[in-house]
Image 1 (cartoon, rainbow, N blue to C red):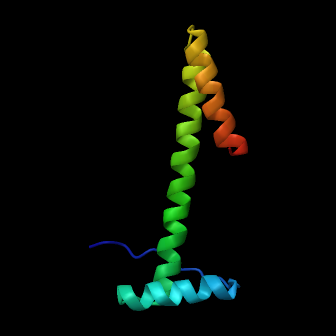
Image 2: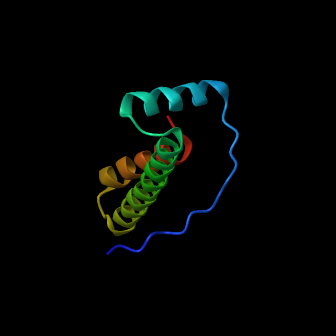
Length: 85
């Protein structure tokens, strides 16, 4: 039997455009708006963790690389990840 995770009530103000999109997703998914918001937040947290992992992997490859061309390419990838295009 799984142990239920304790919930914490949190008040969040959403821009009207985002709130409309959440309601639309909830309706089409046959879920509550609250559940959609929780899933979106969980997805966002996971995406951030994956992005951080990818950054650290690239930085590690850069530190180990002896190939100048690869170093240049890795630096560019890291710059894009950090500063955007």
